[in-house]
Length: 322
Image (cartoon, rainbow, N blue to C red; front, side, top):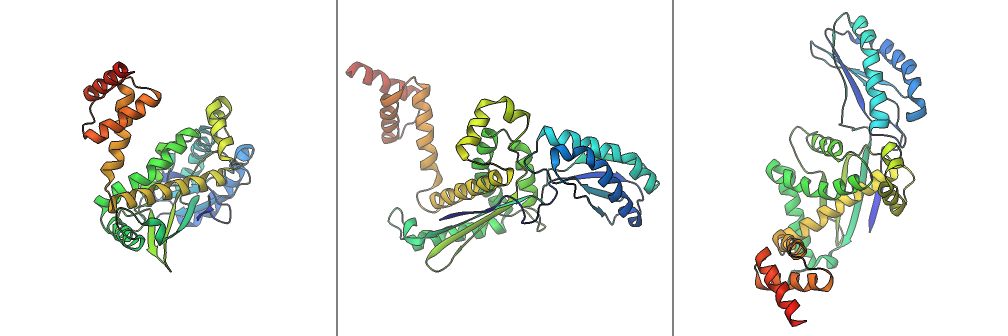
């Protein structure tokens, strides 16, 4: 049973933080900056929705004022980022004047940790049985694999890369910035002080339970959606009507990718699945199509020799036989 918990926090919050780095900025000026943001943000209401400015002042001697832009609703990408960057840049002189310093950096952050997506899954242990192992044994191994990813950044890097495989593909298909999503996800994986797993796994009452939480700043409107028919088709196929729904689906896709990868890793090994995909690609590269491609793929795997020359030989043999 899959459950998409949500594409954002229960209360709508700003999606990105625009940072203006100012020398020697006093914290007592922060409310005034928030008022300035409220006024300037009015120009973005047609894109972003209602303004909800926030502020925070860093404790260092070269303080950074973090200005959160309004809730973007369904928008993101260049249709939102460009005007929001303009907002931050237009605020820089006022912030510098208040702080009595010099504005240095005027840019947004891809760590959209106020726009989190979550998903959860609960799988009966018997459904995990594989390769002569009981479902309970497989589940126990999967939980151990998660513990390793949670404790070791070297394992966590590949663990999370597998999660992002599915998320990135869906981001590309729906016209979203997969690089920004990647950056935010990996930064979020470090929120505890060291790099760790984006998912959690445990065994509870004869079930394997998993969950994922990560930043997911995505869009269902904008120039790419309007100009690219395949993006519109992908969104129609998904049946989403909001960025929040799309974010929840992306989180569920990432969790499903992780479930499949962990199960393969602790049983048959990941290479078997990879070689099956590679054999299919090699058969197509050799020129095989349709039923011939599938036959060539099966024979390559049976022979344990997944090479283009061997695929061409098999294809010629099949052609001569027919």
